[in-house]
Amino acid sequence: MLTLKVVMNRRNRQLVEDLKTPAPDSQDLFFPTQYSQPSFNQLKNILWKQFITYWRSPDYNIVRFSFTFVTALIFGSLFWQVGTTR
Image (cartoon, rainbow, N blue to C red):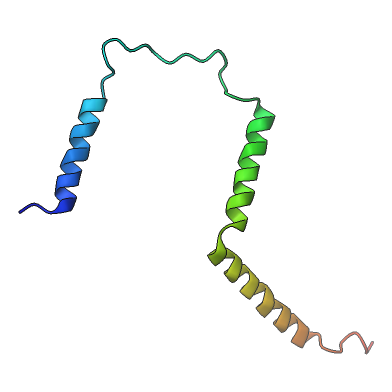
């Protein structure tokens, strides 16, 4: 009996072979400009998506907060009352 993984692999390979060639009545894609948006808008969109992804990653934020807290404790203990003496 074949495993599900092997069956899916064969099905996917057959699907790739079937979809590799375009239909006989199809036309090539055509876009009037090289890029879909101006460069500045593309940059703005990329930076916005990166910002959203950065803040929606709870694991990363927990680790970042933990490192910040530990660093604050280390520096706080190292420089405790250093400012009171010259």
